[in-house]
Amino acid sequence: MSFAGAFRAIAARYGQEVSLYRDGMLLGTGRAVLRPILDRERQYLPSDLGVRRQEQMLCLGEDTLPFAPARGETVLRQGEDAYDVENVRPVQAGDQVIYWRAVLTRRDREEA
Image (cartoon, rainbow, N blue to C red; front, side, top):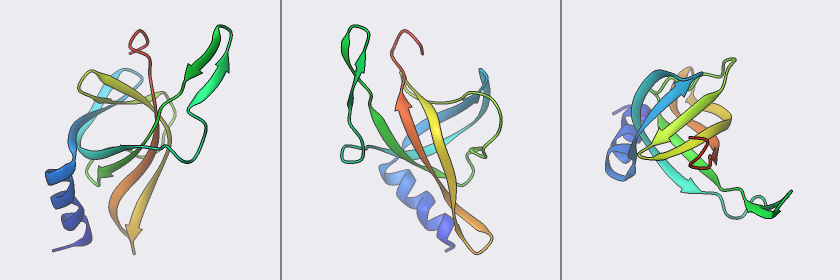
């Protein structure tokens, strides 16, 4: 089994079905493991009305998801939740992409 195949088995067991959109157009679907980032940055930021919550997630997505960085607004949807893709990088073994690592910021329900 390849490294990517091993990650696909992990995503099949622990991941969720996600859809990836760029500028409103569906790029593809697949499985990803989503976990909150609680220790890196502040979750509460100042705003005009006081303090607002900024929830960030770590996304480990299958190698088949079309995550490649490109121009435009990239949004990941999981169920009713929508996330802006802030940063994305491939995790590789040699030339083979094993999975995609992305940092996501949750969108408010009104924006989604």
